[in-house]
Length: 174
Image (tube, rainbow, N blue to C red; front, side, top):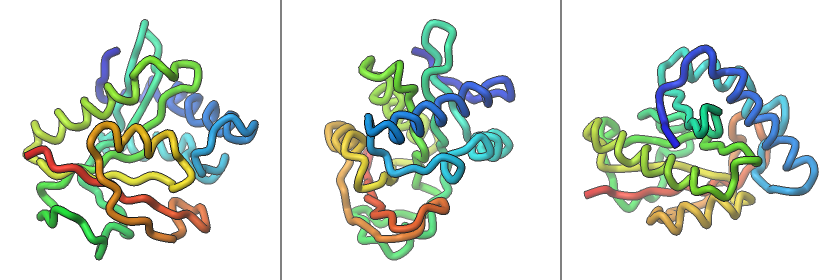
């Protein structure tokens, strides 16, 4: 698997991954807590591409995953009981990590998180933060296995989805 910055030609593939995940959730095959047409959407990927913070994972010439990596901490992070209080310029955040359901089980999520950690190190950010819906037990299990601590659950409206129990996670690379 190879991870690289996304290009305009990747948007359709990323949107397809979002749609495939929405379909698995609608079929009861997964529980992520997202809603088709609300989040994530093709516009989510387009906005991230425009900011320059969308990355894609390729395997065998196909885009199999995507994530947004930047230093933008979402509003509910303010006032959270972080174990590692850190200046904003030393915090890197992983948003909307997705692996196509047909590519699941190959370790691509783990490899993407490793890329995120290396990217954070390279940019002088030893403090890592992310979040996931409390309902997304698969993501929570993966992040725990990779050394991320759940520091709190915040009830909120998140990305336009009401009633989210947002799990805040962090890790220090030092």
